[in-house]
Structure formats: C-alpha cells, structure tokens
Image 1 (cartoon, one colour):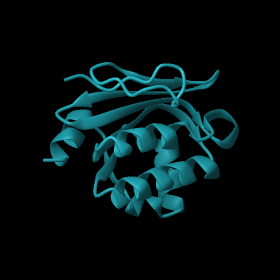
Image 2 (cartoon, rainbow, N blue to C red; image 1 turned 90 degrees about the vertical axis):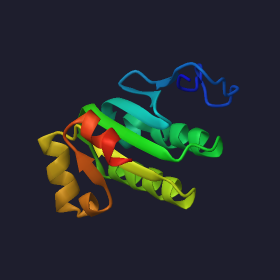
Image 3 (cartoon, rainbow, N blue to C red; image 1 turned 135 degrees about the vertical axis):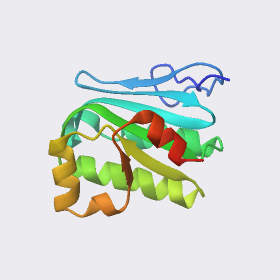
Length: 138
C-alpha cells in the first residue's frame, strides 16, 4: 500500500495509494509510507513566512485517518526559526495525543544545535540514518 495523496490543498479528498505533497515557493513537504510509518520529507526553510502550517496540516490529515507513526525527514531543511520549532513541537503533541509517535531523521548540525539550545531535542528521538529511525519504531 502506498502513501496517501493530497493534490494541491488539504481540503481535497484523501486518496489512499498515492503520494501526499504540499508546496510553496520555498517550502515543500511530501509524505510516503513505509510499513505503516509515514515518512514526511521536508525541504526548505521551516519558518513562519515560508512553511506556515503545512507540516502540521499534513500530519493532522494523516492522524485523522488513523496513522500513528511519523518520521520527519529534515535532510532538506536548511533553516529553522522559533516558529519552525513550534511547528515541530505542535506536530509531536498532536501525534502523541492521537496515541502515536514521531521521530526526526537527518537533522543538520545547525538545526541540531538549535534543538539542543532550546532543549526541544529532549522531546524527539533523533536519528542520523533513515533505516535506523524506521527500525526504532519496531
């Protein structure tokens, strides 16, 4: 079974078996499924002006459809501001409230330093390798 698909906006129907994607000029989130784990690939700047609530909206759609395991791939993220930290935290809280778990993978040194400075790193299980992160859900 492939990942659910959202074409263009979140208001459109959930169609199982395809790929989910939300894009703005400088920010993109796409989702794929691996063994019932939703892997969300994030590209761009995770900031108030660039990302708005796209990541949270995508996670909300999946949790509303019963998905409980999320791996947020930050490999393509080059910058995170305080709003981006808030988005990650809100996603984590909504997943946990739904009885699920959320992990981070491919966090660059700059973002890792910010997570550590704010102590938000204590919320997340952070992995350097996607395979190891996926295995950590088992």
